[in-house]
Image 1 (cartoon, one colour):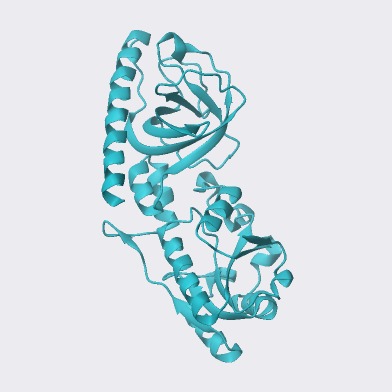
Image 2 (cartoon, one colour):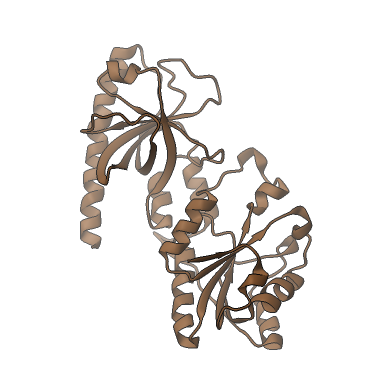
Amino acid sequence: MNIINNSILARSIKNAVVTIGTFDGVHLGHQAIFKEMQRLAKEVDGETVVVTFYPHPRQVLSIGTERLRFICSQEEKLKKIEEFGIDHVVIIPFTKEFAGTPSDVFIKDYIIHNIHPAVMVVGYDHHFGKNRMGDYEMLNKLGAQYGFRTVQVGAQYVNGVAVSSTKIRNFLWTGNVKAANDLLGYPYSVTGTVVLGNQIGRTLGFPTANLDIANEYLMINNPGVYACQTIIDGKVYNAMANTGLRPTIGDRAEGDFIIEVNIFDFDGDLYGKTLKVWFIDRIRDEEKFNGLEALKKQLGRDREKAKEMLRVKSEELKVKS
């Protein structure tokens, strides 16, 4: 996949099939757009182009900063877009000055003048530009004037729910990772560096990898215990993760959020290594227990519950395949 940091450099793209958006999470709705783009690119003998923005507009405009969270980082987003077969990604720097650009001016100056689209593809509820005034109807009119076709992809539904980044963020915010994963089309994950903890988990028989998460916009905000998976040296391991403040141990200040992962059937040194953890399902809320012995007994029950959840998930995947 070719990453272009200046839309002017996209002028040589052949019969461009273009879509525009932030694509947080690269969920099933986005994936449907990418599939339609690939179909259209074959039809017009062209190449697929995703136009996106960095930083995320909400970061620049300080919209909803008290709950400013994203499903994935910029790097993870680009990897996902590449996985779904897009030829080019054009990244437009998002600034407050750029935010003032009227929708039609943006399309004319950045998309038509530089990329020369053969086809524009948008989602069912897509809006863009200043005050989000740009939409499918505007693109249709501009297409008739400048010679490109506009195609709208309908909503994607899972269990009767229309897929959107907002819905996924809300699910993750409340800890409902299973519902979020259904809309994403893959398990939500976090990546961090394994750092030294207080090793209390080891004394209880549940050693944990404590993750230092560099992403300040981490989505899972609801303290609890989760069934997870991770990969170490190419091997998939089942695991359970605790997110929150560890109230029984009482060593974390309010707001000092941690993720610690107990990896099943693994005994090795992970300190300093980067670990990616996929969240499969939620086991329970974080609780304060009456001492470490009570915590140890609950962790045993949590591990059995996690194993059962992961076994069921494995069976579901076999059925789908």
